[in-house]
Figure 1 (cartoon, rainbow, N blue to C red):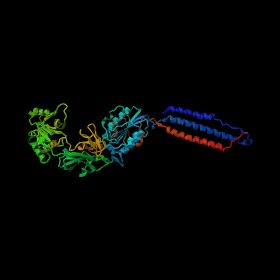
Figure 2: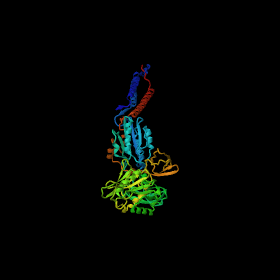
Figure 3: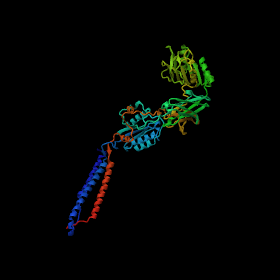
Figure 4: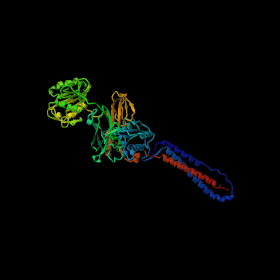
Length: 637
């Protein structure tokens, strides 16, 4: 037992007032001789005894009222876990990421999380300070506020649609509690505890405050099927007036769950449909498209989590590239180019008008113009020193160095959208970069040697091939992958077959000349080179404009990791979140909040008792007055 305002106990000295009134109260009466009524003397004595008992009872009731009021004012706290607690810094991590939009029964997960978060603040007082961190909006600014302000912020929270990084939110919450410099502090983690939202760095903090973690969201009754990224043209950009294909994978569940219908929409119209099982991909032919932009989406039948059942895409449609050579390229490259030209996938032209230059032994690498360069290794190793002067003159910080190790090597690592696993390389050059040089290795050999490297050259992109495309250097010229690889080289290496893309919650890539961004709902946002445009909630197609000119279409989709709904196991959660208490019952959650409670603050009960005693005192006093009026006054002789 303790008192929050012990000085108010001095008010208990007011109990002397009823005592003084009782002790010094005197009844003055006038003696009247009335001999005929002397037989009433015994009745008078009985009446006086009742008056003394009533006065004593009134004294006790009045003293009790004064004592109860003094104890209530001093804020008497009884032992136990009551509502009373010291001023506390509370950080509520409310998970409003994409997975919180899942529907269970007739309500969203987020709606239940909001109810739980509000229950955790049931006993919050004006002396507490509360932060509400929205885990699905890490860029959102959370400021300290009163419990009422926090409740408003919780009620107005909506699903953000991005990834929930709970580990980062926990580290941020720990820091807020540490900086609050209050008597107590704690963190309320109100989430579906999705396993993909955690990483192993959540424990990287000293003296972590208590964390109350909600674990009351039931596991999904049915598997959540979701679509993977849509890939256009098998990784090759589509060409104007040519048919292409769009493939999209289905994940979640098992193949035994049955087929899921998938539909392709382009320009607002259904252009294809298929049925696919989990773990497989649907391939939908589409096109041809005119030069310009093609946009649309692939969707599956909605399930409990609906925001991951649609994948948007946008792609720029270009005419077939013009290819030129500045030196003899050999029989196999000429034959492969002829196949592409006959298929309408490329055309031959002059170097001045070319989109792509194929340069054996780096011949013509210093040529002017924006054409992409494909540099083939020399056929003669003795030419390497002379060949390396050409990249140096062109500002390319990579070199060919003859490899004297001998032996064959296979292509073991490749991000090229062509199967090169059957290619064996006999004669190769080591592709070496100058210190600090940039470049992306797209293919490596089994001995770790870079074999295909993409570089952003000073004039135009450059692709380096570590072998000559002749039969003596590798098996590639006579392999089935020769024509597809050359097609990839001339249509644009590193292209995914689609335009710029982003995930909900990420920044949109913007050209420096952009002046505004048009969101999927039609609203516009002015931009310049200093503004970062995020996509906080809406998936769809974002239009990047320069005045009235369209610069880019950016396809924004939901993050795939949010579709994996498996929760973090409790034992694993205890490993990654220090000082955590896991609660799965809403009533217990409200009682478990404010871990440094001081017991039950009894002022409400004391005031109620004081009110009852006042009513009793009024009743006793009124009853005494009525008796006095009803009974005759006894006289003495």
